[in-house]
Image (cartoon, rainbow, N blue to C red; front, side, top):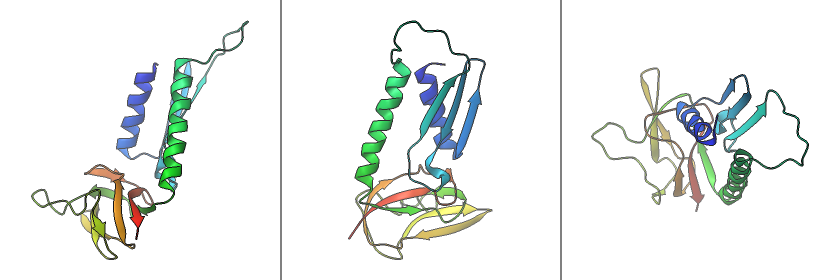
Length: 163
């Protein structure tokens, strides 16, 4: 399994809304955990070869290990930048929608100023559409979920720069 296949697997898992996926083949074991476990940590990939070949020389960092360490360091930098923001999380499991119907405008965009009680999105759960209102005032910095995507309880939805 090459790095591109692993990256596409990570994207697929992130879009599916699953919190953890494990994949084992004859020669590799991969565990992918997303941030939907109640924390705001990024997705990590742990790979463990099933059979270790004997090595006589000093170990050399593979391309996959370099890419994984680079993505982890970038994720740590992003996390430290995001610490100053308030994370608005999903109060329920369901499907995330940015607008009330297909022909209506989205509730909020990045850069919009919001106040307490403003509707940010709708989450559909069991054919009921629930308005998700802001509990803080500030500016939308980042929308963390794609429209029409499944969300888990306590999954981060928005980053807000508080006023």
